[in-house]
Structure formats: structure tokens, C-alpha cells
Length: 154
Image 1 (cartoon, one colour):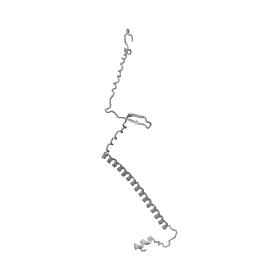
Image 2 (cartoon, helix red, strand yellow):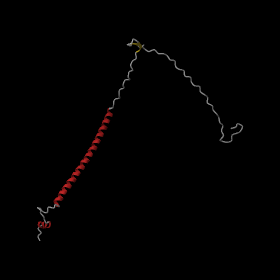
Image 3 (spheres, rainbow, N blue to C red):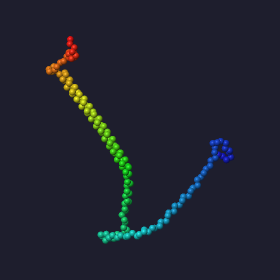
Image 4 (cartoon, rainbow, N blue to C red):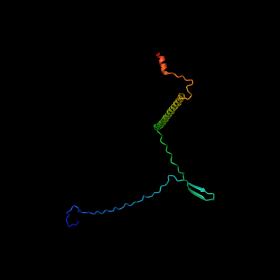
């Protein structure tokens, strides 16, 4: 935009440029190191090696493992629920096996009954239709027997 020219359109706007001000970084001052004396002076140990040399140094205590934290006790209710769930699943599995066994046993009994009926029916059919003739058989005229029983004489 020109300062001597008035702005008549809405699209022309005054543009202001902002320049950021740099921030000076903070200077990190290290903390003074103060030597701290141990509460007790550690004992100095000297060891004489087999070749005659002497090694002197501080004795180092072995690192102690952290104490094992005790496991939290398991709730009796949680144990009872878990055992009850296992028992329930065992009962359900047993009932499933029992019903399967009963169904198999019923099918076996049904097959045995059908087999007995077929064998017995075959034996009867052989007796009726045997080719041995009428040896030892008694033929009864049903019409005459009924008439004689009812005393109808002709």
C-alpha cells in the first residue's frame, strides 16, 4: 500500500511487520563441588603377594542384594472362587461325558433290539416257509372249528 494513496478496496490491508526480540540465554553456573568426608575412615588393607610385592588399598564391602519383598498374600475368597470355577468346569465336563455315554449306550441297546428282532423274525420266517412240508403239523379248518364251537351244524 502506498501512504499517499487512500485504500478503497477491502482486499488491501495495512501490513505490519513484527520482529522478534532475541532472548538472552541464561548462563548455567555449575554448583561448587564440596568434598565430603565419610563418617568413618575406611580401613586400609595391605596384601603381600607371593613375589614380595605389597598391594595396599581400601577394603570393599561386597554388594548386598536388595531384600526380597514378600509376596502379597492371596485372598481366601480368590482361592475359593478359582477352586469353585475349576470344580464347575470339571462337573460340566463330567456331565458332557455322561450324556455322551448314555446316548451311546441307548444307541447300542437299540441296535441290539433291532438285531434280535431281525434274527427272531428270520427264524419265524424259516419255520413258516420251510420246504420240509407238513410233517408233524396240524392243519385246522378255521371255518369248521368256528362252526363246531358255536354249535352251528348244517
